[in-house]
Image (cartoon, rainbow over all chains, first blue to last red; front, top):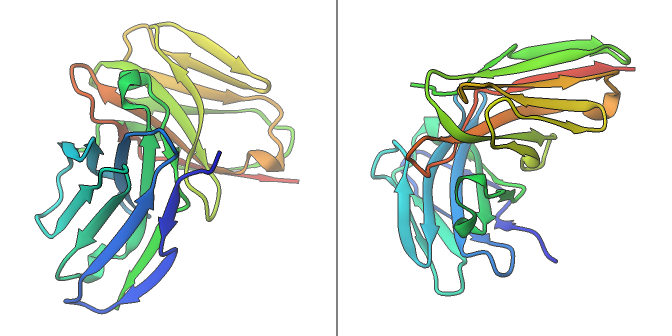
Length: 115
Length: 111
């Protein structure tokens, strides 16, 4: 079956702009998580959605937001971009009901560069 | 505060050598996962360890979960260039369901 699809794969923005990233989970997966990956901080948890509801949120400013649609597809938005937002943004889907032992299936990521 | 510390941060070895990567925390985890990430791709799950003291083997990879469920290790025997990548441990601290990732160990295996 198709894996997790993230779009766009690469994008370049300037400071102050906003960006929207999209994630289509594996068919049947209702949980979608977002992570930010940078060389200095590693993989940092942004938020998790299940059935259109945000279940968990990481320690990121309010400029970072997300949502999930009824078909489980998810988007995340970053407003007023800063240079430090340059990163690989990874989306992962899972069968949330597996609980803590649930496997995360990751997409290839969206690489954002802020100039 | 990084709850999951991995060591070493970088590892560069020759093909055929053995290595061990450690994942440590002061928190208790109900389970720990190990992922490998290759350049240009997202992390891929290697194994999940659930029981304290558990040992799991996947071909040349051996994973162990500490008795106190605060640490884990990954041992690779006779490393191959195909083992090159970023190794990440991950877990949800006890009584939470927010999966966090370790600091990562970048492994390079030279032919």
